[in-house]
Length: 138
Image (cartoon, rainbow, N blue to C red; front, side, top):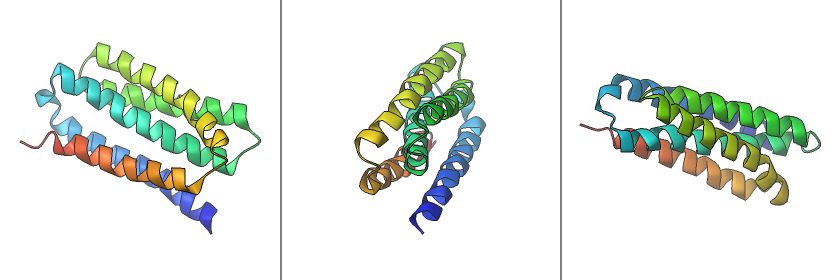
């Protein structure tokens, strides 16, 4: 039961990130340099950490593979959101994706696959992506 809920949350994260990207893409001309850094780093970091925690919960003995997969997810999201602004924000998104992608499975393993930590991270996903969209309200 818990495993199914976590898989649903795993996919919901990407759907919500896609909706956030779609919203920000429409307003990309209004994104300045400082906000662009937040746009590149916030979704990248939080989605990578949430994905890493869920993946290491499901596959606790495939630590290396989950770290690589989470890092690839982070890099892909960093490139996607960073490309909304300019090349420097792509670099920041990739860097943020690498750091959080490598970190997330370690945090999940050290927290002993805590469901409380996963729940807290999931709430941060929704709050931070919502704040990011709200910051573009004109």
